[in-house]
Image (cartoon, rainbow, N blue to C red; front, side, top):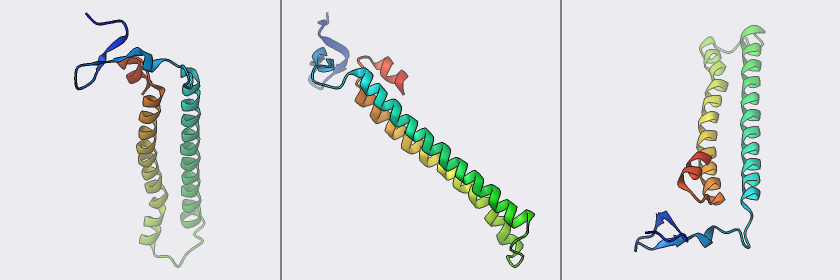
Length: 126
């Protein structure tokens, strides 16, 4: 039988259990404060992602308008114009991939920092 002061899923190498007292909030930041900090960091990441995506979409629109619609640069060869048109969309794709990698890393660290008692609440927080 398992003592009430231990968590059954948190075994160490030598089969000792980690005591529940390490999860107390005495002298540490309360769980709700940690979740607020995590929420603020998530909001900042969301705002950065939306703003960079919006900027790249505006760049895409401006590029297409100046190169194709208005034909402001008639001396540029047509094949280069076709390549330039796709650069903002390529940057947007790279932007999404980079933000996904960065946010996944941050989310995993924040969830570990929040120090959930049970595995299922930890997994659900991700």
